[in-house]
Amino acid sequence: MSDAAPPSDAVAFCADLVRSHDFPRYAATLFAPATERRALLALYAFNVEIVRVRDQVSQPLPGEIRLQWWTDMLSGHVHGSAEGNPVAAELLRAIRDFDLPVEPLSLLADEHQFDLYNDPMPTMAALEGYLDATCSALFVLAARIMAPPSPAIEHLARHAGLAQGIVQIIANLPRDAAHRQLFLPQQLLTSHGCGMEDVFAGKETPSLRAVLDQLAGEARQHLATATSLLAEVPAPARSAFLPMGQTRADLKRLSRPGRNPFAPQPASRLRTLWTLWRASRSRVFTK
Image (cartoon, rainbow, N blue to C red; front, side, top):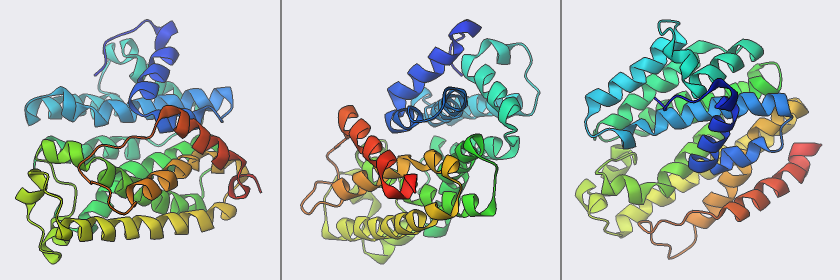
């Protein structure tokens, strides 16, 4: 939960939170109309709060309590403190103004309980389920802010979220390995003969590279599918998928031959703004 802020500062609080901790999504909101941008920032600020729980606690139980507060708030079981929490207040406003469904928001918080423990991600199917409920769900909700829901949007969101989530897992490997946390599916590690302890020790091995190459290939396929589906959704909804432009750039950067997978290589904010501006002007987003 965030520290309380005066209601008049809630919008700025959410914007600062997203800008500080999820700059690509923040940058993407700059291309949205003001009313929709406020709701997008509330949605993304909520996601930041959920994702950051792991880094704010030293034991799983306090993390579960924090996540439970959010699910209770969404179900209407928190009174008073919700209005004093700028992210909660803005999220409730976005839910009301854009008729956002509460269930996927609650499920997103529940799914991130996995982050609180050091259990390995068991299979590729389990990873896809995790990313469906988190990254893909965010795309669905963001698109609902921009346009009416549709099966085509949900289909696009699933592939966009899977691509984005897989790329984030590859990018976050240095941090996760240092925390002895494993989002790389154990199934893939086993199939390529890669030991978990080697990953935690930061050893760059051919077997680990094979795992990462397979994951990058999966992300590439999902991104290609998502790109092909953009034309099937209304133009206003497409702006919710602008972060795909950053996913494409990140995937290219992370797939460079000879790259050390344990060396953090974040994109600069200026490069991110340029990438998303170019994506917003591209034919797939404007035609």
